[in-house]
Picture 1 (cartoon, one colour):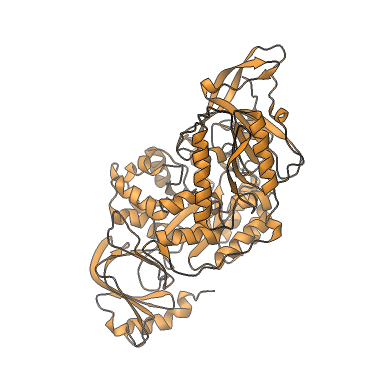
Picture 2 (cartoon, one colour):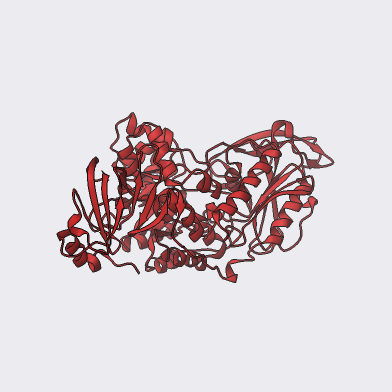
Length: 595
């Protein structure tokens, strides 16, 4: 375990006073001080035992024969970036491989909610990721998943967690709080399990994560805030951000691979003049292609600056504000004495090229390349072979029978909204042939099926979806299907849907694109059907081929795969699919396929 501030205090004092040499001194940089909002030129930094000991105009008194000297040459000294809310599994790689991918982009702290693996493997899965995270050279803190399953009664996951598991996890050393409280109706209706989980977290003096995925800012919102969640990342409008901050929550603004919620909400600061101290930047979900090609938290900060935010304010939202929210201001989030020595060297505060990354006093990356050796983490056999379909599927499994005697039906259709997590509840008139309801490519209506994959029941739940634009015989299947992570198959050909589903059963999970009987792209995710232990660069290549294959089938949506993976997320309005049927998330109730 790394030494605490208290353990290191005598050395920190001696280095600051010039009585002992520092391990490392960074000379002559421009200090981005997130406490004062200043940029202070000609600053030296002395580091010992992985912590900042001295930050000031001249650290020559801390230089000894063995001190490593890093010349900043006038570059900016920025605190290491923090991601306030994210799910590693969305990167399709392990915690270790995710860290390897994001360290060169300047991320030195992550607050992860492993509720994806929790829905497949339960508490043992959470413990696996907790233990893996604890061994990394950057700070990776874990939020205990709160809603497994996310909506009891509306879906059946591969596992179930409750108050006893939350209490147990709160004693683990790397647990920072409770993961996003997605069952917001449960909170407003005083569900005993939800309130006891929140109480157990607060009793442990840890942070309760929020998830209020509703545009209703009336009494349900006020009831949710009164229930205890301390932050929320589900806002999409400026009024959402303002309402959360006014009620004492942190407004978490996310820019992930498919969620573009910063631009609208940051106007609360840039146009409405709201105090930025209670705003936090995060990613929520980033797939490996985004990590490898576009960046991580540096991408979010750059984007926030491009929306008119002052660079130092954007950096505060990705460093100090995040640390303060989780009660870690004395541990990280700024370049000040006693804190973990996490910092970035960059020559441009707005463009934010990441030229050197130091975490806990060690240089981990330079000029966009990882320089540290971070060994792979081995997952046990119990985390593999989790796709249990029970049988091979055939095209007939995807038949949708029409009401007796009908020549046409009015069907409820899930409508995808590009770059947003919510869906629309659509209705479309569809033709009937030989008693079966037809898909309609002209209306951009194809079929969606949820294949149960945790208990080998062989069950298939069918429905319709619109928005992907598929215009040829094809199918896309994925065992990443938030939050219960059954298998989601979307397609225009029932034969291809069966081939796609069976392929994922063979390889133990992942994503596959099939067209006219041929596999066009495959991303194998053998760990819980969610992650690969291959390098992020390799997964990004495979994911790139997947995106190309989806486009080849007619899909032009930005990050269509992320939209695909959320089609079963029964805690975000309006319409979803689960293993019990079609779910109206505005009413939190099952609804019929035909209107």
